[in-house]
Image (cartoon, rainbow, N blue to C red):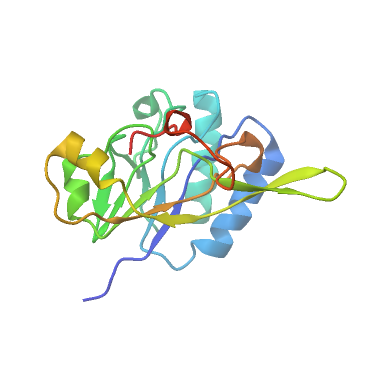
Length: 195
């Protein structure tokens, strides 16, 4: 049985700068041309402005009109249901399962169903690493994180679990939004996702 091909991105945080839409268009053309479905895992805009959401979604649908687009809302998305085009399907912020993958934005707990998946994909924390040169200049680069879930934390929420999905945390599409620096010490209270 053929596995579904998913193009997934999130944390676009569009705030009205046209070149960001052009970058989004290029990335979709390069990455999503031969997929079965596109999933946007939250935070289409930084402000929740519906006119910005409409701009982002029009770019997506213009490029990939033949592919279903699924949106999982994030904490910056507001009332998407009112404006989503008919061909774009809105799901719960608690996520969606596709084959053996479960996708969420990451600002809220997923449905218990995610425990049946092999892989959990989330966004929200905008992971990056920080570099520092000899002169003290610092810069960050976005990173993908492949890690494991905290079994105790998951059991506390959902009860005893035998097996947990692996987790992949994707970087923010918009590099200007900051996020969690993963090569620095942080306390659990600094982690902005319940998962």
